[in-house]
Image (cartoon, rainbow, N blue to C red; front, side, top):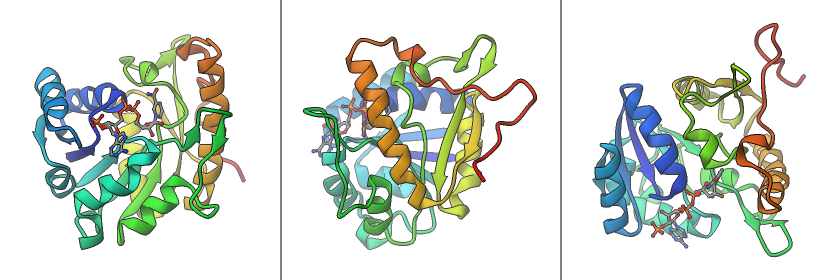
Length: 219
Ligand SMILES: NC(=O)c1ccc[n+]([C@@H]2O[C@H](COP(=O)([O-])OP(=O)(O)OC[C@H]3O[C@@H](n4cnc5c(N)ncnc54)[C@H](OP(=O)(O)O)[C@@H]3O)[C@@H](O)[C@H]2O)c1
């Protein structure tokens, strides 16, 4: 499928090549055109503006810092409907590193705020709980077992999220609706704190499904 990516940082660098390898077409749009172009050329993706990435994608990945949520969506034309009817995967985390406190939007998560700012979109949060170095693994597997990737969000976007997680060679785990993204974002703060304390990216919360098969979803 066609994947538009908003943001040209480390998460894009880790995830986009995986999806290109899986046969998807990827267009990267970035705030800083030169940076997006350099990355796109290096990994064999197309490049464009943020708006072009939003329009190109059947599925769109938002991969920006939380400070960039509003300006990125504005430049991508979200208010004018460029993301309407599309699955938008949000890998972002909203944390102030000074003190490890969560950033919210009147108590709402980044993913919920994204859904508000991009009317008609189907927002799913995924990929926020592991370091970019984990997403760059081909496949992300530990002890020979695939990483389990929790995701939450709009029901209509979940099939796309499952597919893109599976395309990495990882196992999708549905943990709920958009309201549950608040917990995914809070949980990531623990991960980030451990990483900043020096833990190896491959060692922190690398969820594995039980040997018997699919990990059970929470009741
Ligand atoms: N890195 C990880 O291990 C990791 C893991 C899980 C989740 N995440 C989350 O995924 C998201 C992307 O992370 P990343 O590591 O790819 O970050 P990054 O390498 O720092 O890249 C961030 C992207 O956001 C853009 N950006 C930053 N501030 C902005 C602003 N104020 N306005 C508009 N755009 C802005 C940057 O634009 P420029 O291109 O102009 O710099 C860049 O394209 C973040 O929310 C992060 O918390 C990261």
